[in-house]
Length: 586
Image (cartoon, rainbow, N blue to C red; front, side, top):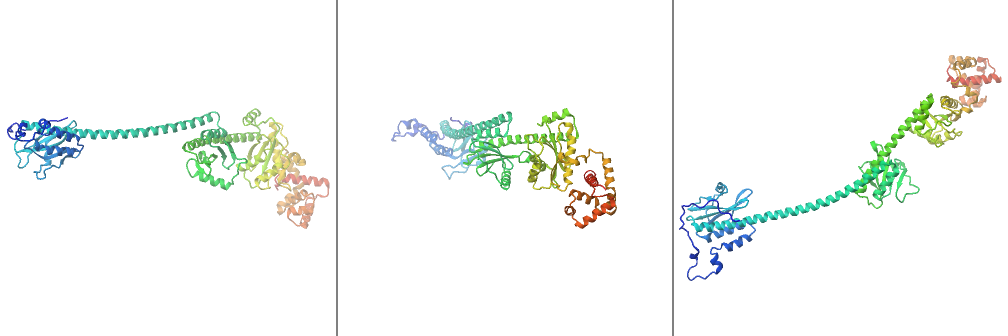
């Protein structure tokens, strides 16, 4: 371990000056120091024990410097240690010694060499070296250069100090390595724990993915998703629509009957959950909104009264919600496509379409056109034909297992249904659903073939028109019950009907047009009221005497006898044609 100086002292230094031999130290009369003193007269062996037991580098240098004078007429001027900032002086034992120039020490370039000091004829910098290079210096001075024995002793001292310094460096490195190793072990143990945790999480996540993937592969469905979520979490799972109605439940403790929440409470809960990402706890439930594309289609929830749900539970709920969102979105898209196809089908049937194509398309949407059908036309003033009105009409007319085909025509809804509505049952149900009784319904005669559907549509429309132009404008009218009015429709020749009206009402129509009166309307109302003066006056909102005056003017202008049965019949039919078929045109 000892590293000898790389440069020897100058050869011209006298070997006689300062030469000390071991025999000179044992004078006559001195106490015999014993065998150790005889073997180690300069104390280097004893010093080595002290140096190698020392852990501080600066202390090693100081001990070596303190022993320099024991080797002969030498003096340790200064000691240095190599640091990250360069050479750092180690304080010596002699504070009164001349100061060495620390800056000149760097000029040695890590080699041993002579250093100039005031009042010193010889000064030498002995390098302290280890396996890694220069560790420091001990600056030794003397009145004259050392002899061969002196050089040997000084080199031995420097070698011991160098070995001790190397040992402290090695110990420090080993300590650092031990600390690093301990840290590495700690980091390894932490990484292993994290790896185990991650492996466990990945296994759980894989289980969730595989379970829901199997559900999707088998066709999915709300019941299958809630059952899978219950198996994954051990908590009862449920699906509600956006209004709070239960659609599916998996697990124990299903409420019966299921509680119904108010619309205000439901909307408040939906807003609360929508404000936060991911599943949200609301009382005893962990809730996730099903809202693909921003539209809330429903709610997926877990019953968790003990608050045992962890991150795995939340992960499973979140992914089940995504599967359910795809399922509900798919169902909505299918429903929209089916609704569009059903509307296209009934539109084509009302206009007349190819029979083979119609049967195939009807079968595709689950409707059997081979059966007997009826056409129903619904008009409800004040209700635009939007989706809510359509749902209300469809629900009120769903009196058979087969859904009716339904479409819109202007402000009217047209249905093709297998069952003939029962009297006013549909009207009553629809009036209750819409909250107003002011609507009317027209029902066609029976349709036995596809070719009859356009005609039946005209019949239902005619029945509706008759109802809305009668005294009782609200309710249901069946074409089969129209009697005489069955001939008053688009099926007749319009020109012949106009001629008939001109023949019987022409003078009155012209008089009304010229004098801005309402004699034809008065006559129509009089007949609608069965010839009753009081009822007719009330319907026209005029006084009884005013009605009598108008009827007298009608007799005079038309030159018709209202008391004659045939005349009354023809006039009544003419007023109905004028109102229903010709729309009251003058």
